[in-house]
Amino acid sequence: MAKKILTVDDSASIRQMVVFTLKSAGYDVVEASDGNLGVQQAKKTQVDLILTDQNMPGMDGLTLIKTLRATPQYKSTPMLMLTTESSDAMKMQGKTAGATGWLVKPFDPQKLLEVVRKVIG
Image 1: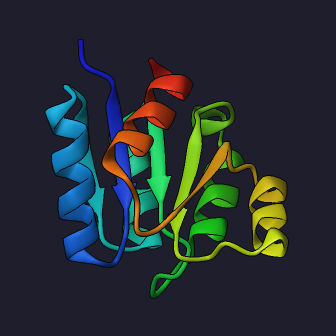
Image 2: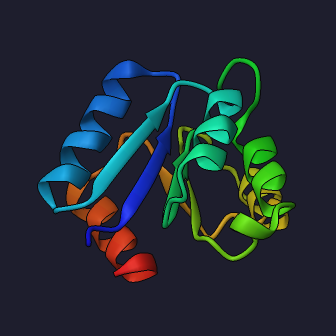
């Protein structure tokens, strides 16, 4: 059974590229266009990995990670940030929030797949 990944990004074009990349590699992918919808989707469907943007309307990526880490369902699920934010301070905030890793946009599809395979196989 294919691993299921939730991708959360307010940019439809980024979601489209991420979904294409992950589905081409055999993963099941569910999408959400902001953090609030991401939390709803994660509660509705158990996923093996969450890939989230930082800057989104409603709920940002760090808050999404903190919210899901507070639930038993996602306490140990890998969560990756995929964002334009690249400062050390922001990465430290991500680590504190519970992010498993950090990827900077624009992303290289092969690098994304390498990281995804490393964390969920």
